Image (spheres, helix red, strand yellow):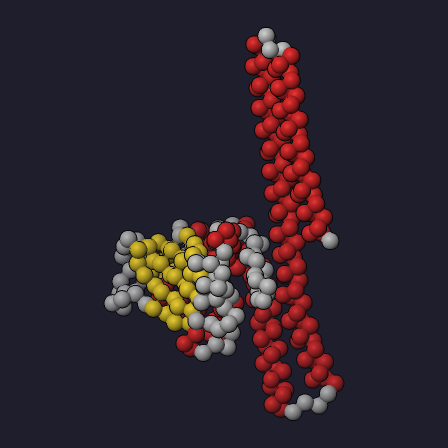
Length: 305
């Protein structure tokens, strides 16, 4: 209902802006025609007309942006509510079952494992929301230290494999040739969050099977580059930049519905930029997988071991 109302409001303000612009043009042309011999008034009229048009355009753009922002926030709230409510309902159901019915030991252990998985999912959602609030308020530059990127990426891969119960070959790491060790100056907690979010995204958007390749490399002798390539559902060209905005979620196709809060890639971009780097996405289109490329400045003097 709210989405339909906002779409109606957006159409109304766009139509209003167009009508006011046409009306302003008509009035200005008529005014200039009636007062055509008075040059000073003509110049003043054109000036006022330009101000009026600029005001109408800015007003329309502002209103449309606000409507879109509210739509994204509503989508975020709905997603977070779902991400919080679903695991809580699942845990409560298993607890009620354990309390009210006799359960054999094998089934009991299965219930425990499922509840642990649900609480991990719940905790991950809460941590993601809290992290977004932290990063939006301040830059955590005072906790930086020298980090070996190779080791951190390997740790994040192990965590992701365990979290999603994947075989070891589901996510493969291609290290820098020659066993070169890459060091960066970073907040370890924040950088771990960024890499884990990239890996979780690669897994989440590969519903037909997880085949993720991580590659570390050096660019121009000054940048450490981590590329994460999956064979999942891919990204449409117009979404390649938008996916890093707060609350934005690329539309999934009709057969695959991807859950999420729309904060993961926003966190990645915010963290990486605070560390002097950048992140971008590439994809050949829907159904053709995607690659997320993270770049960080090397800690010069520590790039090789």
